[in-house]
Length: 167
Image 1 (spheres, rainbow, N blue to C red):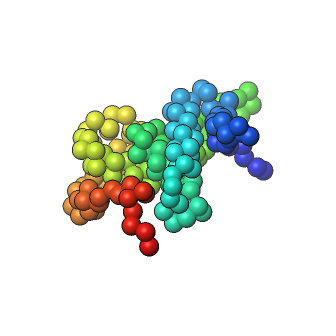
Image 2: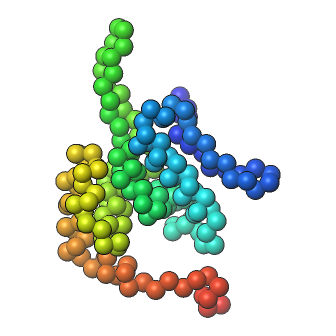
């Protein structure tokens, strides 16, 4: 059975950008914000002069990471997996859904990198994460803090596309 997307990104003949959302997520503000963040990141990554890392086959994954680096990492992580109990007239049980393209762990790792690169205290993020994600974020921060990855990323010098040497 095909699934309906939570949001879409596109443009019309006038090059107007059109971002949509699925009305079923209106009652889930976290998922709605994450969806808008993902679609906004689509706009930014689509207008980038370079291909996404790994090529266009990885565009959706790069878009999720871009949404985290726009400052929406907590929303992205909190909405990646959703369990909910339901009760109906003649049934009860659990409902499960996923959103986005990265797993919860991948979102938490991206969030950890973002926090460390921006020198934002992990303690400021923890109260806003789902309880099941807090321990994972602490573990990621510890892992990254005991490695050279963050310093390596901080040492990268940006060269604007117009300033790149011609090959």
